[in-house]
Figure 1 (cartoon, rainbow, N blue to C red):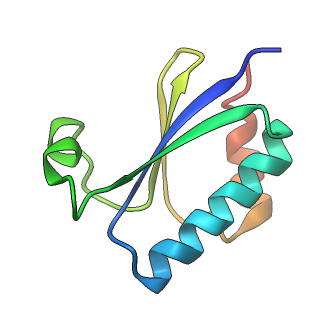
Figure 2: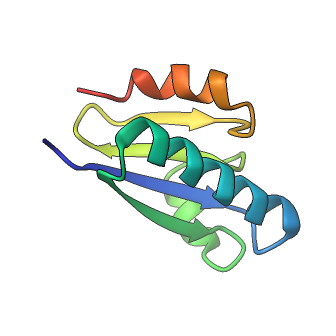
Figure 3: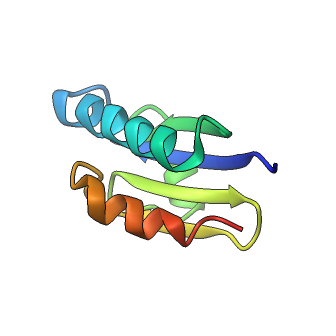
Length: 91
């Protein structure tokens, strides 16, 4: 089984970002059965990375591997909707 690689862009270590990270990890755990890698980028500390990848909104989750690259921008706390969207990330 192929491991999925994701990148998550968040805006700092504020309560909303902490909640977003927790929700995203929960959804990824459910959908990919812990068969994924998640890189977390704080766009406050590394704004150049956000600019290079045209990240305008947070949270932004990007599926890097397997190709094709895909983005999800939005609220992962709505678990059923997030799970439905992430089904499209599977190969």
